[in-house]
Image (cartoon, rainbow, N blue to C red; front, side):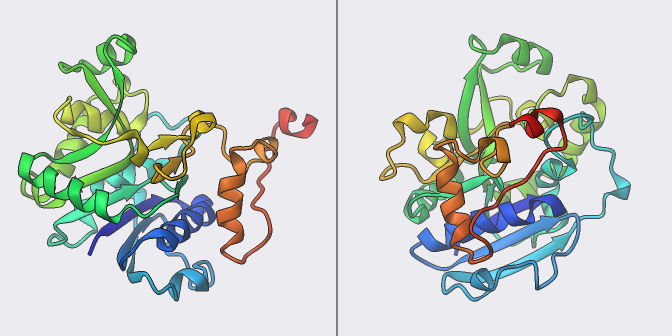
Length: 277
């Protein structure tokens, strides 16, 4: 059984549930959903549709207590401390899971990913690597990032979808190594824990198809028969009022509607630009 992981704060409960529901609607066999959150969502916050879904093989919620950590580079950022939760997974998840597939909460599952994920997990173990991820940048494309992070390799990955060799992760105490990097390299970080992960991995990852982590910006070329995970990466989210009429928002809104909560999920930023729009 594949173990999925979501990490989010109380402001992303709706988005995470929309993502989880889209996943459960597409998988061909039961999966386990693990959540690390900065509070314990009450039963009323988890949709009955998710709790009673016939593809849910287990739902485990772990509460993160932040007082022991000082997460860097969050001032005026569009992400919260929850982005760092995924580097601490073995502090929460059972040690014997074998594999973990991490998904950002702004991801919508478009097609059944079970077979491609199983193949990825098997190949990852054969290669004896910690993670599989989608490479999204090279030294030639983003020299500033590579130089600032002091990477020796020529490949940088997006951490929105991570297939994790959890046995390898636990055996090598990777969470502790990531915490050490976070503590001593704070001034170098641009993209938060994604940079921490890239500093540690430094190119030693198994590359996965972009269809497992497909950026919504490329929606013009979207072939929904091939894309497994559509990722609303970056600042412009499909639930924000200024983006609600954009064509890329409809896929998210359709999946939200399927939760049977309300017709649309709309949030308003407290700034002048939102009021003008």
